Amino acid sequence: MTGIEAVLARTRASGSTAPQVPGSGGADELRQVAQEFEALFIKQMLDTMRSTIDRSDSLLHGGKAEEIFEDMLFEEYSVLMSRTRSFGLSDMIYEQLSESTGPTAADLSRARAYDQQIPSID
Image (cartoon, rainbow, N blue to C red; front, side, top):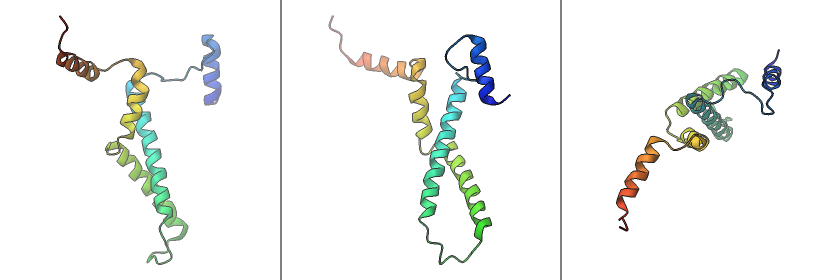
């Protein structure tokens, strides 16, 4: 049974019209997916930057093997860059997608601090 068939079988069994995706819901899983998306975005950006390099004067003419190695190397670079959170894209994606879960403790503390600054009308 393929992944799509498994999702369809769970959907039919539950009687729901929405697909039942395995593992949906966890905050840790959402953060991981956001980080993977950021890595994909960074990889696309690095590939575009690499395509602008003039290789005609290159000392190494590695051919196809060099291209494959560079592609794998830059994929690892993108994963490492997303793990350091230096871009901040995964954090923004996580915050945007997790808003449906309600306010966080940091949001509540900021709201309380703001409320304390406003003079009362009493």
